Length: 262
Image (cartoon, one colour):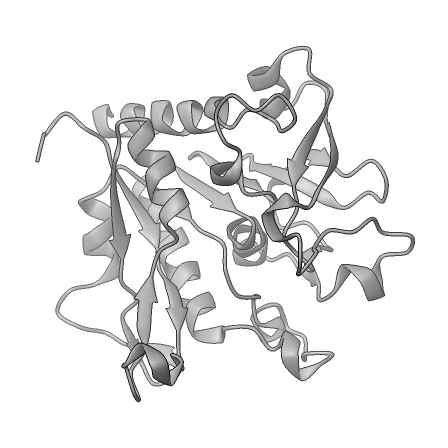
């Protein structure tokens, strides 16, 4: 392994009850989605999935801790996946199917704070943006369609990553500095939950202009923390229709390099 390449951790998705046809009866799977790993690799960083340390329904202590992983890495990407549990922000699920993954929430919240404490940059994607918000004391709309009036379609089960809508970038924000004169852009949209109350120290960097749903955030704290509600790893290079994902990754990796040299 080249010592010069940045080492970026990816939080694990967790499959608690794998389909029987996969051949893992009674086991729990932890995995990452290929596109997010390839997004990092395309920028010449090394991608490492960080396994959750779980025992029953909570993170357990072991001889190897999440903090040990964070010390060996240069930054963290919180990838998308299952809903957050409303219990993680003090609510009961409005519907059983919105119960989310409390085990993953606990694991990722601990991972997030380890990075903040150690000064390692964090980039949240989709669920990752929502996790950052909840970790900083914010709350979520459990379902955009039922809680946000006149909302545009933010998720389409059939279209999946082909579903898209416009965002409006906040002038003077970090995202605005990355994209210059671009004020409005199109991004994919694969989420039915969204930020309701903003977490402590967070600033909004983009919204959906049609309904006001928050689409990007950044923390005002001591270390780099940013989140995007869309999936930039699905924005293929050369596309003239979707917002270029490269500036986001380039900024994140630049901050990771700075943190390594600090």
